[in-house]
Length: 163
Image (cartoon, rainbow, N blue to C red; front, side, top):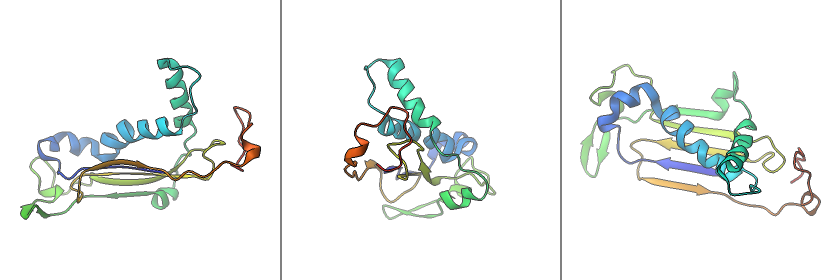
């Protein structure tokens, strides 16, 4: 499962905000986790706001925490550097107006996450977002495999890793 939101532009006039938030707070916690929860949730028994919210929350609560040494294994952070856009010189993040020259704020982040429930057991979710990427794109790419027949009658709270 891959969720990508790439932006071709830099931070522009949002440098003050972005310097405080970075890609994790700006895009991952606000947008990409919403997409992950919509994709990962079980079908709601009714199309009511509270029911859908509860199903999405169950996915978020099932995310495996990334702790200690696992951060280096499952998270990549970076900043865009100086380059060219459409043949024109473009500044790096630290050269943008309103950004500290010693900033460590990420403008790119990629994460490998796991949803620890019966349906998504062992399936990696790759989330990526960044500024000043080669092209603007928002996409969700998933490769589905047929579930084994024994899993089709699974109990609601099962942790069956065989599917």
